[in-house]
Length: 214
Image (tube, rainbow, N blue to C red; front, side, top):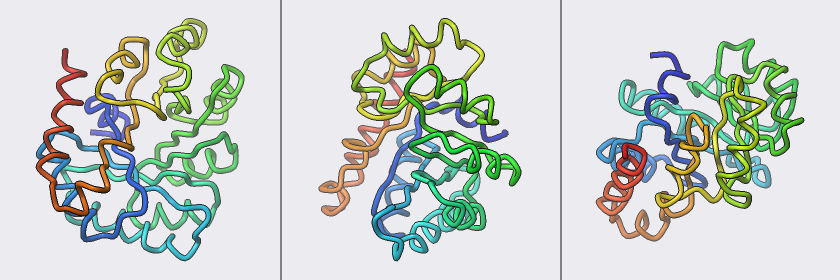
C-alpha cells in the first residue's frame, strides 16, 4: 500500500510526544494489538537537543514494525527536522502550519505532506503547494460542523481532523468528510505508560477502531 492508502484504510494517526525509544516500542506493540497502525513522532521545537532522539524513535519503528506500523514525523517546521525525519524513515511529514518550502521539499523527497491549516484559504493554499492532505487544526475547538462546511466547496482536498479528537467524537469528523484523524492526549496516556499498563492503551485503541467501524 502507498502511504495515503495506509491513511485512508486505518484512518487514525496516534500522535506521540516526548517518549524514549524503549517505551515507544512497547507503545507501538500496544497500538498494533489494538488495531492502530499509524504513529506520528513529534519534534519538540523548544528542545533541539531531543531531535536526534525523535529521529531514533522513527528509525526504530521503521526497523522493528515494518509491515505493522507506518511511522511519520510531526511538528516538522525546519529543513533540518525534515532531513532528520526522512533519513530515519518517516513516510509522512506533518506540520502545525502551512510552509510552502517544507511542503515542496517533502514531496521532492517522495514523502507524503500533511501540513496543518485552519481556514479555507490556508487549506487551499496548502493543497495548491502540493500537500497530499491537509490537517485541520485545532479541529476539536470548532467541531465536525466546521469540517462539513469546509468540505462542501473544497471536496477535492482530503482533510484530517487533529486537536481535541477523542474516541467519542472521532466518528463525527469522519462522517463530516475527513479522511482520517490524529489523536494524542488520552490515547498516549503518560501515566499508563509509566505504570506499564499497556493493556489499557490497547483497549482504548480498540475503542477508537470500533468507533470508526460503526
